Image 1 (cartoon, rainbow, N blue to C red):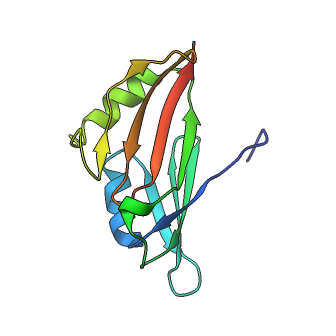
Image 2 (cartoon, one colour; image 1 turned 30 degrees about the vertical axis):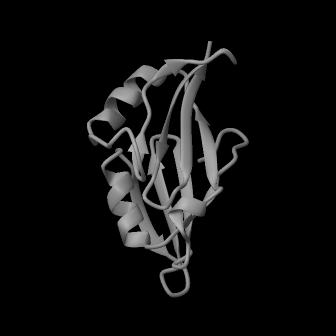
Length: 122
């Protein structure tokens, strides 16, 4: 049962099964649904991401992304680090840093070029 207002990003995916596999490495559970298996919903705790099928997407041209604000970014970073993503290219994971805009954050670029920033306010 939802207890507060929320926002859920809807991101493009060239292959929903591949998207589910990638995000499973980051601790997400998910399911493909919709007409023609054209939609997926993934969750990790209270975080929910939606994906729609976009087979013609060019990852290097993607502008899609979202920001996930958490109370404590360190354990999320450590959990995602277990996926051993590269630091360069697509996909990749950046290092955890304190930013000048008073956020401690890191970013993941998924195989479809979606930018997922995860951070906590300082």
